[in-house]
Length: 302
Image (cartoon, rainbow, N blue to C red; front, side, top):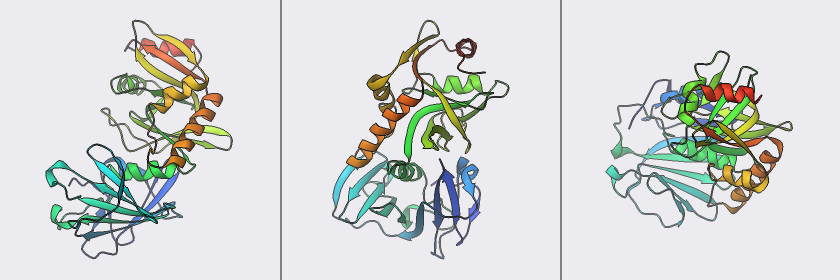
């Protein structure tokens, strides 16, 4: 499995994504932990975690009976028991045996993560939360009244306010990130995944480590000023969207937790409140820098 820099011993590491803190450690003397990729940007000093995670080696070849609640279609599955959830990370090259399993209590306050040792080089350091598990854990924590993750590009303009560009794959998020990163005074929080949360009566957007083609990731946040649902067009054009229509557009581009009805309800309520508070538009885009000038002329960016 791939690893990166930022070694961590028994003391563990703390990661903060979208103001949610994960504490990761291992008491297994044979396991050396390291963060990988852009996750190092999200490392923070030790503090009070929202989720405490203990990692170790294990044998995951034995079958365990439980109700399957959800199958992502290739990367992970979730099973439910009376007191816990069990997340299986799977890969085709390993067959039916998961290479990693995470057990979490029903409150999502603590987790045990076991890695199937035969699938790893014991001499190499590992990142026990390697994608997709880190994102799956954050999604579940968000669904407990904290916020929503969007398939989106997040731009902080020169006024230090946030512009959210969301869309399906190929709609233009990467192009918007590429254009805006060249603008003086602007920055990109992520070119593919953005977390939205509400704080002190205002909606905020946060960068994440799960970037797209431009590989842009930042742990920063910005107050959300406007939302744009991207579509290809023959000219740059805005159409305001409100109410249920706007919420439905955002829901289809979010990452809801379908296997928890209460989490699904929360996501819908959050998006309803969001679209009532923040202007939402359909934006037809011609992929050139002129779209930035167009938005500036519409007074959505400075």
